[in-house]
Image: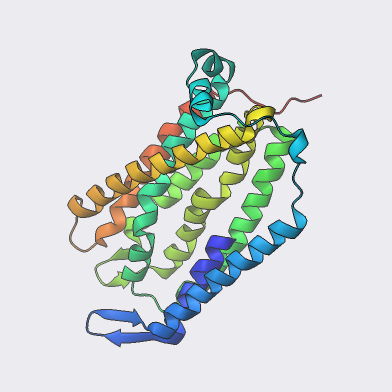
Length: 277
């Protein structure tokens, strides 16, 4: 939801404050103040909500603080690795999957604006995508809690891959297929945001109860690694895979599903954590 609000705010800023130049539309100073103010206000509200409503355990109930090197040695300890091997399996699967996302993200806005659509058309497409994303995310969350984490992730990955791989066909020459844009955008949003619901639930199930902070840190490091790999792959693809008549950045959407589909066998090797009574 936060990402969609940010996209909508950016499009509104472009609509209100955009200035036409020979190089294209440029958002002026007031547009930047508008979007940055929304971002700053969001951080402020989030911080206040967290400060007043999120309860922490008393310091007396927390485990004793240990030195960083001691914690690091424990993580790379082979016995710890064996004891939490299912967690590290899903870490590897998530790394591959999120590398596909990071292949797309640096070029998503470049590709969107290269389509030559009006701001209103883009807002409508985002709104449709938001509604579908909300429904699918809610459905995936319920299915994951009822039938298991592993069962629906592979088929969901296959479906979003089929949708995303159609992206190069959105604009051929000067003609943009707007209905296809509206059709494809929900697949992109589900890949970036929707599948996070069952994947996060699954990975959190596998984190040791008394070491959540440490293992969440590992997940954050892995997400950073996937961003580096994905952005490099996306940059190479956008630079060297060019076909006349198609948007140059389109082919990152063809390569991203390679990572998505490649993560499926890894997800299938991770233990199901939902135990039916």
